[in-house]
Amino acid sequence: SVYIAGLPYSSENARMLYKALLWATHKEDKLNKAYADHVEIECCYYEKLNTYCLINNSLENISCNFYDINGEKEIISLLPGETKWISK
Image 1 (cartoon, rainbow, N blue to C red):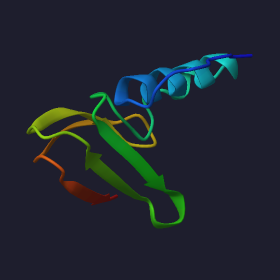
Image 2 (image 1 turned 30 degrees about the horizontal axis):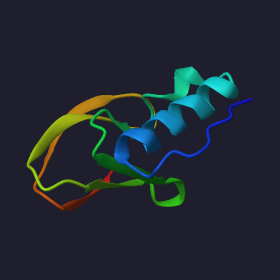
Image 3 (image 1 turned 180 degrees about the horizontal axis):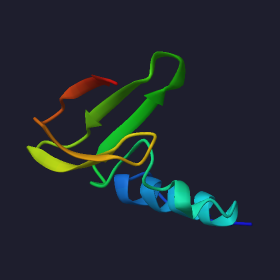
């Protein structure tokens, strides 16, 4: 189990909670699937559409590694506040 109390919301804390949940469920191997490795980039996967939504939650240009649902990596770049849709 994982117990975390009193953490304010931040990108870093959200990422830490995600990793803790993967650890608690013994699914650490799923970390690099439908995932962006920069803490300010949010990645959502829509399975029925096989489409990803990447959101830059910062005020800076960011380039990072994006991993699709199969773990295949590509480098993406997003402008401040940009939302990018990727269909595969």
